[in-house]
Image (tube, rainbow, N blue to C red):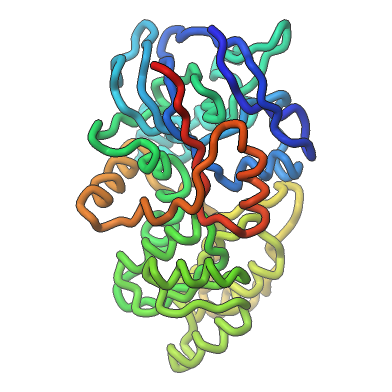
Length: 372
């Protein structure tokens, strides 16, 4: 079949909207009609060259939609089911899935190559195979994906809102609750209040942190953080550090969560300095893997028992946590609707990413009107 998609042909170039061929589902695969796709910063890393996929590639790794067809052996979903996609597939049987670490599933090793685990592709243009970001390609009206990449959700939930729990919401929320281990009474500092950071704020507040301190140069993002549970918000790391010292009588923060769009050495240093004895720095944001961004005193790390750790998906388990977060939303205990700043059409994908660069959006969402 034919489908319209936003294709990235190389770094430092915009997405091109084009009609591509799409294969139907093979064994263990499903055909999905996307209802919505989130504009997440990770796709900007492809444009900027920080992450290098196999080009060309259909962008988008945050999606929600309706299953239209299933291949042989599919048992998780059936046609008509509403699903949210997980940008990390989870097979359920590898070493990591079977020990409760679905976010590290071995199937995730190929997500930047854009092909199925067997090395084949479902998007094509003439004789050219086109990959799919995170094996999803949510910047397409339809896609053929693995059943291990979908999570069935309650069909009364609005998919244009539920789409947010495919990446940004659980990554931020779990960065605080799982990777950061925020507890009642803690002081938590969060650097970068975008789609992930705003949900780290929600997560830290939900965990009972006494002080939730947001750091972002954009005034409207600081204002949003205060509405989502932050107790304080500052434009600079230095301002935040001074207040942390005052609030904690010099003990400093328990956690520093780095959720900026692109991680640089200075933010890691600020985070390391703002935590006290036994404190934890969690690096959730990305940078070019070849760039060394962590330079701190090993002596201080030892003497003060400080920890620096990375996390993927906030160390959440997508098959469980996506459903859990949507049920918290359904119960009025998690804000999702308020996260969406602007809605776009597929043709406006480049405009949406420029808005993200310009700091205008907490979250942008593409909404499709593709006929069933």
